[in-house]
Length: 139
Image (tube, rainbow, N blue to C red; front, top):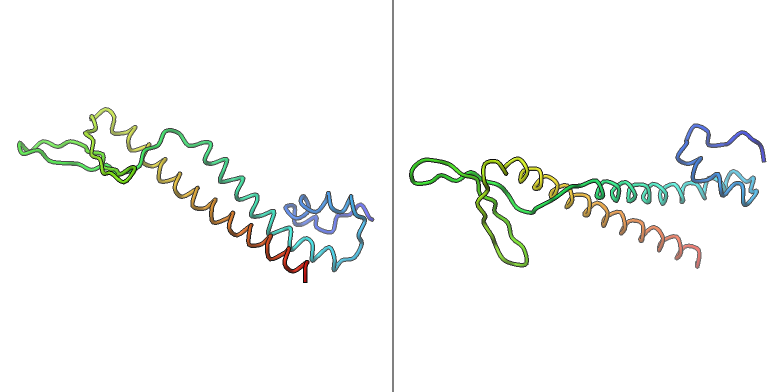
């Protein structure tokens, strides 16, 4: 095997295939192409899952719901947090000094939901890829 890596212009593929090339001195370009295209999508999915997990770890405090401005009969306004949890609905008064923190918690919760939805979608995609690969090997 030569020192010039066949995937030098594709670092993500090069990184995932290098251990394989060192283990199994396979010189067939067709075999390398087949293996890298299969592992590329799997490694891409696994990298996206790892990214979602890292992003989840960076989230701070969170809270579900929405923040709205309500008017009192005297014309003054106040903030109200509305959310549901465990099948029940809740509304809470939010003090003016707590509004920025509550807004950040709501943003964090929305980001949490986006990331977990993405993670589950990727896990399903990865499971399907693995099942498809194992069923094609059995055939």
